[in-house]
Image (cartoon, rainbow, N blue to C red; front, side, top):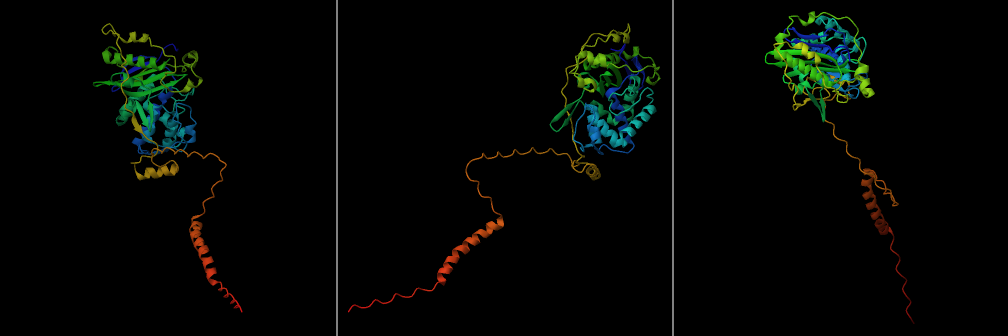
Length: 417
């Protein structure tokens, strides 16, 4: 593992730093990238370029993306709203491309907008090369930049805050569960995003509120999903406990930058665990990885003599989840122009999504026998003519019989003498 796992706790409202460890160290973002993708899409909605009901075309380029993905058929139609929900919950790389193509016109144009937006927000350590976080050595960020982005999403789009707290989706008969375990196990947790690739490790931007206090935590580079969840929970719990003892008075954007390349954790996170080869770049919940309990040794640096953290169960048993329903196709209750646009984008796939009827089972073929095959049915016109022909055939002999002349009478027999 890297020398230290970057960690950062900030007050979401003021931006003040509560605690920081290597918060400006360069890091690969993995699927935390999708938070920036979401910010750009929400900006486009705010500017009137698209709406939540705008139909998007799922292309072959989207389908070709690596997992994690939905794998829809090419020409499937998604609304912007449903695509954003899938992006946050499933962390689908293909849907990130669908949003980029539909909102930005092309993936390169959308990525350019991501970078312009990042600069505008003060994310000076972030560079994006794709909209989904698939590993690229030039795609980097930092815990500081991710905290800035998390704050901006809540501040600039408060009506969309529910996007980050969805724990599961329902698509037809399919239930799609999210990867952020804090949502169902940590009191007050209300959202944000996970990320994982082998080079990056297990990352998390998490938000939690208790009373009037709203905290954002960023943890990067952990060895497992459980470890990142436990670390984030410990930091949040300590933050809600005696956060005034950690206050630095420093705003998150002013943290000093540490120069250096992002570490590649592939050998430590994936190869030494003998994980399946396909796991290397897949955002997941980490259940297939070898789990290790976090020691959280750095937590001792967060407390003072006035506040001693007592051992306690921070993570509760998972709470029941009610999946949020989504659908494919244009919104059947949306504006007619959107349905027309969907039909123009993909004529075959544009009809509003309705569960497809199950195909009827084919009737079993009759077994071959030696019996003669029945004669093929004659056309209806011939079947109608058949009785007429039969009647005519019955009338014809009678008519012929009536037309024959009567035979001559027999000659009289001679009288005997």
